Image 1 (cartoon, helix red, strand yellow):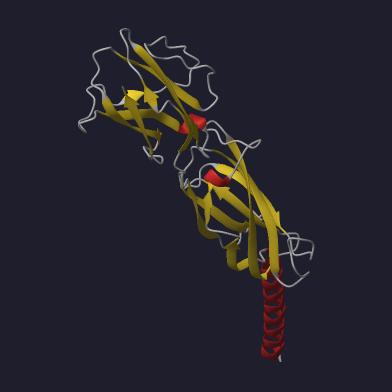
Image 2 (tube, one colour; image 1 turned 30 degrees about the horizontal axis):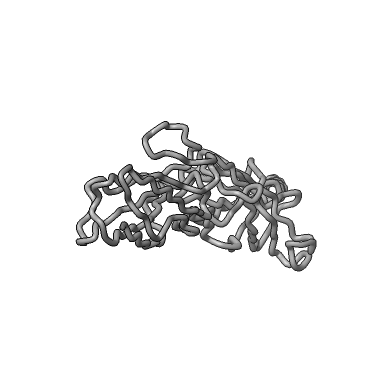
Length: 280
């Protein structure tokens, strides 16, 4: 009889203990419920910042504000947890911007409660930034964070070449007993901004086809500020580059060829304007 009583007590305690373990295990599982992100996507994987204007202009000193769509699909999302998309540098140490993605059916999200969260991440960058950034997709839960998906985002600058036009120059010059002065100018544009221009110049070639000894001749757009010989530029920074050249009475008569070009700071060359001047 005593053995049976001990056996019943042991079995009862074991059952109670097992029940406690099961209950505690369930509580722990509920407490550490973890969100799982299955898939993530950016609206685009490359951004050409040369297509972004600030107040209608592009300057090397610009701070750009960029927005990009982001989407994440999840298979589970813990209560009161959110999916966050963040744009960082390549090391992940500098965060340029972040946003919470929503699954509420409000634009840019398409359908409510379909396990696909969407949003727009807005971030700022200096225009000079090029290279790879990272887009991090994770949840806002810090105690028991979800898995993380990281996507590359390439920042590029597809440089635009300068364009020269509107040449102002005579076609014929008659040289007498005194030096003859010739004023020449060209208009230069660059969709990357005039600040991106490195130099504007021309080369001249004698009637026999040989190059002039002074090639290349620099043209100026500083309003004559540098006071160099021949710098008769009228207005600084207006995109019109000019130079006045001098022909001495002893200059060789004939047809001279002039080739005008511009170069930007990436050393990209503009179109070439070829002009001839007949010296009599």
